[in-house]
Image (cartoon, rainbow over all chains, first blue to last red; front, side, top):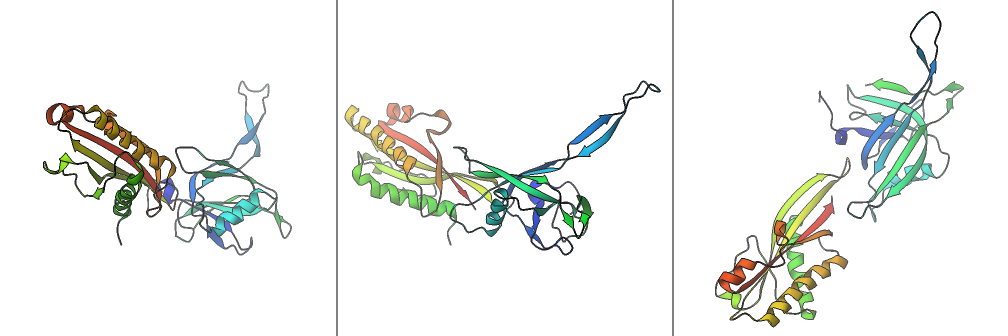
Length: 151
Length: 148
């Protein structure tokens, strides 16, 4: 469907296959999701100009998302992702604006390591908050960098 | 298969009937679609349970949060102003609201999120019906939530 996409129709996937042959598994119980690409800027002034020019020196990427885990319900996806947050597992995520197999879907692909926290507000359902940080990973000697894919 | 709000209404009526054995008054709560009290009947205590509102909002990309408000109406006409009966009816209202602070509606799997007396007014009982009809009228609104 063309047009603005509400957040609840966006999709988050993790790769249960390989880098070369990915198998994207949906993470269904995502609540809010946002990602940031903070950049570090280097100033490159010169006497030749009044202007203080900058060049991008470094680029970061962090994907933050909440997960609505249901107590008493078996959830293999949560079990997997929760496990990544307590060790150093590196996993690919695809942050998509639609179903990943649909033509026109745009997704950000990257490799991450995870951390998490949990909130249990008295007036709302509990939520597990994950933060995925871009990490260094090579595939057959080739460095994996984030890419934007349009299906 | 019944709608969750219907199962919840029926469960509240059944639970109140069972629990009332240990409360200020014993009664049989009646589950209704619409609150309606016949003039002749309110000489004795009448408790009716009615669904009032139902709203839903996204809880996650796969779940919706359903909020159901169930109204518990308590009516009794007094032959004369009897403060003992009046106080006992107030105590009954408290016993009903206290019960759901610690007990989940298990059949419909709904958790209590709030209790209001008299809706927006917050009045524990209706002052007008005392004045005009010698009737104690209280409406307890129980707000339940279910994720599905």
